[in-house]
Length: 120
Length: 107
Image (cartoon, rainbow over all chains, first blue to last red; front, side, top):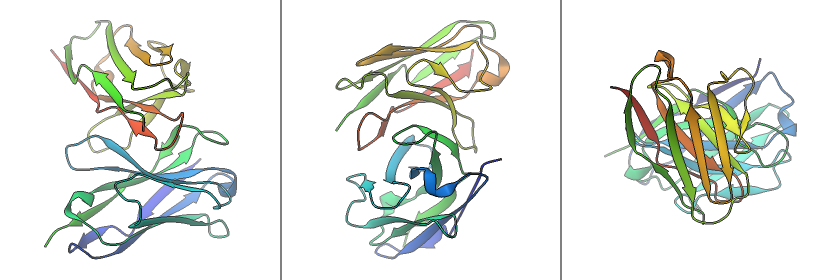
C-alpha cells in the first residue's frame, strides 16, 4: 500500500523558514514524479512544485519561485520542500502527492498534509 | 499559464439526481485533465484522469468527457457519499493548475 506522511509544519513568523518532509513507502520512490500541493484555510487547491524521479528537473508556481526549493533523497524515500522568506499568504495545509503513473500525470495518492501557519 | 474555470461554484442537489460540473481551460489541454473529490478535512482523491478514464475503484456512476478546452464531470445518480467538493486539474503543461472547485451540497 502506498503511504505518504508529511511532517515539518508549524507556526513561523513572516520572513522565516521551514522545511517540510514527506516520507514515502509502498512503491519504487525513485521511479515517480512527486509534487507539493497546498490548500489555504477554506480555499481551493494550489499546485506548488514538482520534481522528477531523478531529481534533475524541478518546476515551481510563480507564487513560490525563488523562495521555495523542492528536493528528494531517493536513498531515504523522502521528498522535501524548503520554504524561505515565508509570507502570510503561504499559510496552508501542504500535501505531498505521488505521480499517478510514470512521467507527467495527475496526483494519486495524496498525503494527509501538514499545516503551515505564517503569522506574527 | 493555463487557467481552469469550473462552474458552478456551488451545486445543490438531491439523492438520485443527475448532476454535471463543467471545467473550461483557457487554452487547449488535449485530454490531460483530471477530476478529484475532496471531503472536509481529508486529502483529495483522484476520480478520473485523461478526461474520461475512471480510476480503479471509483463507482461507475461517475463519468468524465471532453477534450481541448471544455470538460464535464457527470454523476448519474447522486448517492449520500457523493456530497463533497470537486476539482478539475490540468496536467498538460507546467505550471499545473486547478479549477476553483465545485461544492456539491444536499438540497
